[in-house]
Image (cartoon, rainbow, N blue to C red):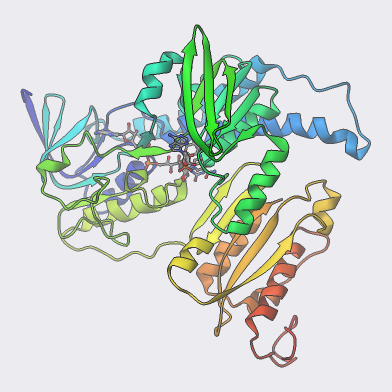
Length: 482
Ligand SMILES: Cc1cc2nc3c(=O)[nH]c(=O)nc-3n(C[C@H](O)[C@H](O)[C@H](O)COP(=O)(O)OP(=O)(O)OC[C@H]3O[C@@H](n4cnc5c(N)ncnc54)[C@H](O)[C@@H]3O)c2cc1C
Ligand SMILES: NC(=O)c1ccc[n+]([C@@H]2O[C@H](COP(=O)([O-])OP(=O)(O)OC[C@H]3O[C@@H](n4cnc5c(N)ncnc54)[C@H](O)[C@@H]3O)[C@@H](O)[C@H]2O)c1
């Protein structure tokens, strides 16, 4: 690569996604010499092909679903008509609006702070970007991730294999889609398309549908989604092939039963790969893990003693929007402050899946508690008979809350059920504050609300924890006397 120009800067940030933009703002608080480098287009994964367009598609699906189930309330219109072109027109135009705000923001930043091109490390302080060499005192890696698609499928299916990015550019809804991968993206998109009248089948290698780790809730999740969606899980082989314009998905289960079904498209939702492979990281001598991700401290974002920082989905640690923004803030701030580095606190974990019923994980997951060897008890509630959930016709799912034996500290929760996006917040906030189960029980609960289900689970947990009963002066909702 010939180098025609050299640019010198204090902080170079690779990637203008959510993490990179947040790092840019934080670094600017310490130095005006900041350079944000982007190899693709401005607008971020979240706004262009992630959080926002997926929720727009789900919003349309929710509308169709509400009309479809309205007769159970004694309300009906004359059938449900989904106009695929109108659905996709709204998805695209609202998505473009969100993207427009982000692009506007970046384009209003000074031109000398921005560079377009693919950045690659030459050494710890130097990046090659096209024919420009960027010499930076400190560098933030915020390169995000991309869909991981089995190469054999790409070869076999050509353009009939699609990823989430493609869905949000559709002009119309297709007739049929095979969705492979029962993780978050697969579940959200498969259910939305199904509710919009697309013939969908969701394929999975295991019996796990969504990110829940509690075995009882995993089983419930499989049961609930099997009830609504055509699902083929626990498959030993998934072998798609192309016949003309059709995709034939041939599967065999562990018992050897073979099934074939034809679709217009195969949507691969088979996880994501961190963008570390084309960065020349081998030229820096930085420590990396088996996946090639720079080993760094999640409270400073710094790679062991080096002037290099990591933020966002590229690190595979909680690949979520709010975490990418936080990590960008930490990485950019510390890149600005280098050689000082501040240890920054991290928020309690919170993840939400916008399926119906929704899924939420707050604080420590069941699997994390088990692997850490923590002594904990579980409180449970089913939403099938929960008052408000039944009123709304959304009485599906269950909530499990976890509390520490001995201290009564609330540790975390997993749930599948109504209003999980809101309950998840309450629960994560309690974990972050260090609330005890008793403190949560002493908080107000309105009537009739879904949160009353949470109270039932907390009461059960408090009983299971067998803690000494507080005096009547100290509590409103006290556990039993042992
Ligand atoms: C379908 C889908 C739905 C989602 N829904 C949600 C949701 O509802 N809620 C939620 O919290 N999260 C959601 N997420 C996750 C969320 O979108 C990500 O956590 C977030 O966008 C990550 O931001 P980032 O800055 O790390 O990466 P990105 O926004 O991807 O930014 C990385 C940037 O780096 C650039 N880049 C890469 N390599 C180079 C290089 N060598 N040189 C220069 N530039 C480079 C890329 O072009 C890109 O612009 C969803 C993701 C997907 C895919
Ligand atoms: N609501 C949200 O917040 C939201 C929505 C979408 C995505 N996200 C974020 O994006 C991340 C990535 O989501 P994702 O769905 O791509 O990943 P994921 O890890 O959640 O799911 C990938 C799934 O694909 C399966 N899989 C992998 N290879 C396969 C193969 N060859 N055949 C069949 N199945 C295969 C895996 O077993 C897994 O079930 C999530 O972890 C989440 O952090 C968040």
